[in-house]
Image 1 (cartoon, rainbow, N blue to C red):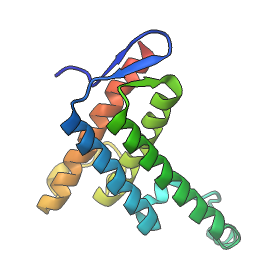
Image 2 (tube, rainbow, N blue to C red):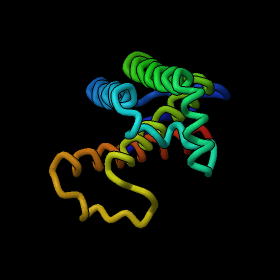
Image 3 (spheres, helix red, strand yellow):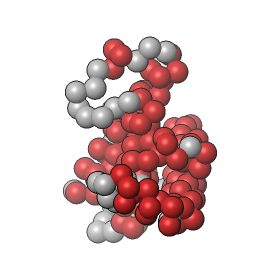
Image 4 (spheres, rainbow, N blue to C red):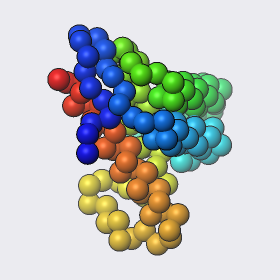
Length: 155
């Protein structure tokens, strides 16, 4: 399978994804954006605890609830921008490619939380429903896109 990205010059990445695949990838990012906005528990890996001490962490969270909401909105907005970028742009500069890479990684963290993936020892046979198996396929697909984008950025 050919890489979905190809370097073109010093600061340009060509997106080699057909329109149908662009729509699918964009829709995944938009749906995960909705998850980030609707359920902080599924997106906690994007905003890890600051303190090991639960009391200090609780105090910090009380003081910073509006900041947490703002962070959630910021991540969701970034996902939407990346979704639109994938849908419409044929060429990405290095800043856009790096932003896309960050958003795809964040999206995978949200999916990992839904799936219960904590580390590399995760056993996909533990996925019971077709819905979870589909989410795992999306998780793997995004992982492949991330890997290809990293390889292209490094070339």
